[in-house]
Length: 166
Length: 166
DNA sequence: AAATTTATGTCAACATGGCTGACATAAATT
DNA sequence: AATTTATGTCAGCCATGTTGACATAAATTT
Image (cartoon, rainbow over all chains, first blue to last red; front, side, top):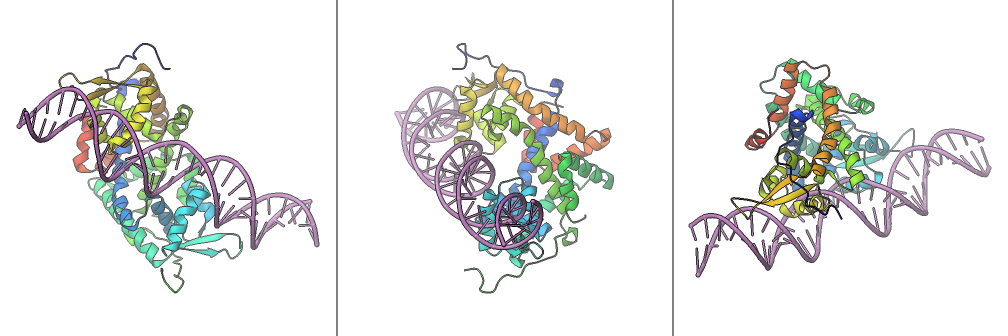
């Protein structure tokens, strides 16, 4: 397979001269890696993972959202969701309530326990963000928020606008 | 287990009034979700995943880095790395060369094939970033880069400074 | 009223990419 | 000569994603 001749190593690094913004690509990788490391440590104490965190987060931010709506935000399959959601319900962090108008739907709400955990997970992330903005002007903050929002697929930006205001 | 009484649902959303910057937390989640979706589609054609992408990226940006250095950047175990690295070597995207001074080390280099793939993966990400910066001033760009860098753990920022300049 | 569609749940099997622990080898260092 | 270091490898486990198939109840359409 592959080649008969040993493939030659390339010894020069890729740089901005190749026409690509590697530095921001890498900044996003490192920033996100460390941004998620804070809650990961807390979650480990509960036997939960990042998947539980995401569910708990959006159930707290959009109480009463349906299973279908949550799937749409998370972009995972219902079978993936089912496992983590069941654990969150079994441990009393989330409750499911049958929809009033449409009784097929299951509205998802946090319990007091689920709210407390969601806050505990968000706190170190918020602290990290506040520290990163420490020397920034209000205009610079807005520029960062505009940039991040513009990174999202246009047709999915509506999801952001549905979330409770800032 | 849990409680005898059905846990009460909380019907009010978490908001900024809870003292936490939820909007930036969510912007980071959505931005990163879509930022990684571009290369994911290309990788699927090769039977590769995000793990291959990360290895290929840093081998191209830091040709000749050793296995230990790569582990330090990725923050994974050598057993995790071994699987994806072996596939990249077997498919002729990466070559390993014994270190000259220290012959225990394996220096990692991209091949022409590996460089081409790394560029193909970075291109849509760079395009997305360029589009997100479209209406930003140079000062605003710098503010975004400062913010992202400040989000990284201080002791790990040295890793960023080792990468080829912008 | 009957047929169809929709929202959800569930079972089974599988893939990826993390992890730990144990052990092997060759080369460098002490 | 003994020890440490850089790397590789085997085995097994776990979390979290996937697809496909099927079940149920409720809403909607015919």
